[in-house]
Length: 134
Image (cartoon, rainbow, N blue to C red; front, side):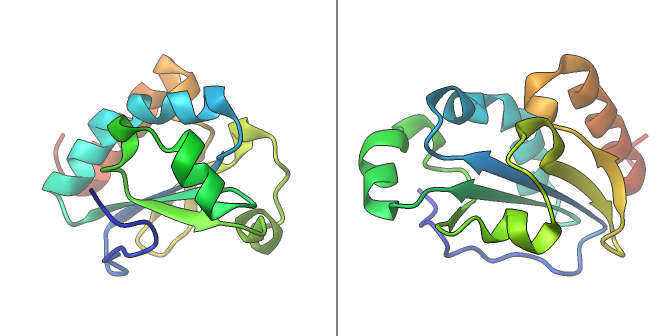
């Protein structure tokens, strides 16, 4: 289990993925398993870093009720004030809170790949291209 908010993030990666998930939304939490392939890639290649921000106003309730065993190995950063959305000027709309960034932290792709097989394929292709795996 990776302790929440105790991550060793690599700020010198070649490619980054950043996503924001509403931790009070059961169906949103259920999409975590759709990230498995990308998380494996991240664990196997330090040049690819994933940041998963989860909004919850109550950390204790999230851990007790919404943090199932199957996602406890995911690298989660809890956001209790929707800071991720505010800092980045974003709305709560889930489809536009996931970004693939290059090494300069410039946006390469926007959209939530956990909700779309076509978008997931595009993310994987772009990540592999950036990592030199194609």
